[in-house]
Length: 130
Image 1 (tube, helix red, strand yellow):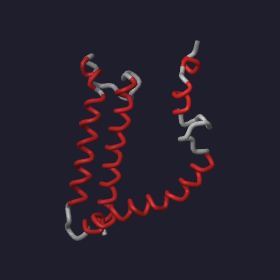
Image 2 (cartoon, one colour):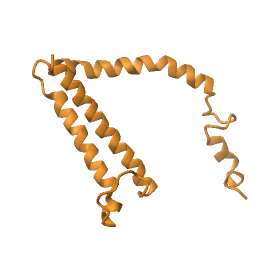
Image 3 (cartoon, rainbow, N blue to C red):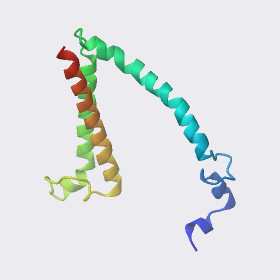
C-alpha cells in the first residue's frame, strides 16, 4: 500500500495540489497574481537598493560593507556545507556530488550568497569608475 493511499482524508485535503482543498489556487490564477505582483516587488527592491548604491559614489561605504558581509556569510555557509567532506579528509573537492542532500542545499545557498556579493562588488566597481 503506497503512502498516498495511507493518507487520511483530512491530510489529503491539506495538500495544495488537491482541487478539493480550501488552500488550492489554480495555476492560471497564480500566473495572474505573479504578473501583477512582480512589478511591485521589483520597484520595492529598487527603492531599497538604489539610495545606498547612489550614495556610494559620494563616499558612503554602506553598500561595500553589505557586500562584504554577504560574501562572508556565503563563505561560512560553504564551510558548514562542506564539513562532512572535511571530516573525511577530502579538502580539495569541487561540486556537491559527494555531499548529503541537506548539505547540497546549503552548498547551493552559500554560492547564491557569494554570487550576490560578487554582483554587488561589480556594481560598485562600475559606479566608482565614473
